[in-house]
Length: 198
Image 1 (cartoon, one colour):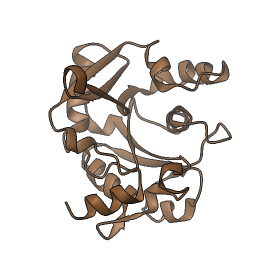
Image 2: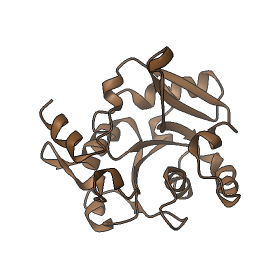
Image 3: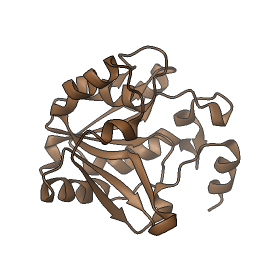
């Protein structure tokens, strides 16, 4: 396993929250705490440093006690803009990302992604669940080399926005996880109420 002090965790909270009625998903209360705080607490033991990418309500995110950075690229340009921002402010060799609406993320996420990245000599490792027709990649649960900043910046300058298309230009290690429930995203207010009781 790689040294966790060489891994920075980035929580992606830069979206508009359109499927939740244009509210800031990461700040929605779930089990008596903001969703992004659940993500932060699950990620904290797995990494050396933490930061949050957010484009609104910066002060509440700053109250979590970690650096908060808005997108360098204007206009809510999607998760790649958040990843680029994280890489700009990343001072470690690797960075792992998780979305702010994933309060169940695995406790061994970083360990398993880092093992695969090293074993396969990949640029990036991404979580995958299911098999066959149920197979589902989770592109925003990824571990990547911080040296990819220039490559990603050029992709964005050329107009690229799709995360899968950028990954297709890299050596990617796909890492199977058996527990599909760990990657549940709470995208709607209905989800928030449904999972509150689980």
